[in-house]
Length: 218
Image (cartoon, rainbow, N blue to C red; front, top):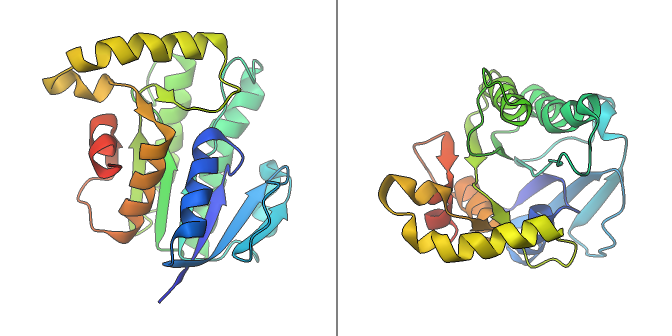
C-alpha cells in the first residue's frame, strides 16, 4: 500500500532534501506540500497548497494523509522578532500535530533541536521544548521528535557564520566520542533519510538525538 505524505517546510534546507527523497520513494504516491510560497517543483506526486501557515487550522479538510513530516523552523537572524519566531517554531508544528490527531494521521515526525527544554532560560531552547510538549500531548501513534545538533548543508545560501561553524565542526567531530557523539554536526541529507526510515520502521524512542539520527540516516 502506498502512502500520502504531508510535508511542512519543503523549501527549507532539510525539507528540500526530504522532498526529493519522497518523490523518489515508491512507498509514497502523493506528497502534499503546505507552504507560504511555491516550491518551484513540478511532479505528478506533488499536491501543493500555498497558504498562510499561521492559519493552518483553516485547511483541515485538505490536511489528510498517512504521515506528517514537519521541517518548519527559523533562526534568530531570519526572524529577530520573538513573537513571530514563536509563531513559527512553536505555533506551526503544534497546529500541525493538532490537525494530525483530529484527522487520524498515524505518524508525525518533527525536527526540534538538541538542548530543547520547556523550562530553559534560553528562548530558542524553551520554544523548542514547549513545541515538543505540545506535540506529545496529542498522543499520535507514531511520534518521533528529532533533536539534531548543528545542521550542515551544501546549499549556497549558508551564512558566513554557519560556514565557519561547519568548518570548525568538521575538525572537532572526530574528537566527539562516547556520550559526546550527539554534539557532532549533522547533514540535512542524514536527517531527511532518518525521517523516512522512522516512518517505515519501528523505533522504540520518541526523542531521537543527533547521534541516533546519524545512524538511522546512513
